[in-house]
Length: 138
Image (cartoon, rainbow, N blue to C red):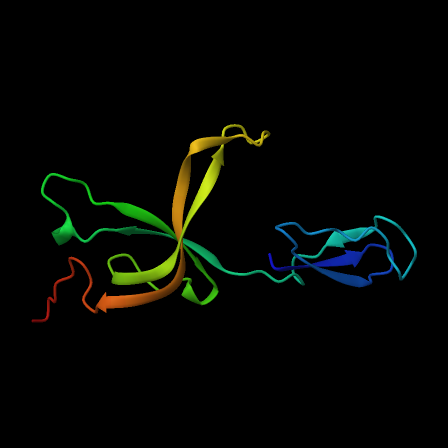
């Protein structure tokens, strides 16, 4: 969610709030009818952004015999959603990030192992042919 739209139950007045530090503050007082805590979130008027999780794997010919291919997790936003499909050979430009994992969701302590992922900046399809696809017409 990028922007939340709230509607007053009493007078149907509308207020919009942007996300600040990952949180949306709900309006507490309506200027239209002077009531407090009368707002409800209106999903149809709110603005959302697209996000896609992609797993990328090493090409089979670059993996040494007997080893499993390495994979990495990507996060694609907005225009990069549905840009690539399974089997496409791509080069990725992005920001490598590490995110701490909490020991307990209710506590602030983190594990000493981090989850890593890449925020996609650009995809470049390096080979137009897809992996393991043969032309049956030829």
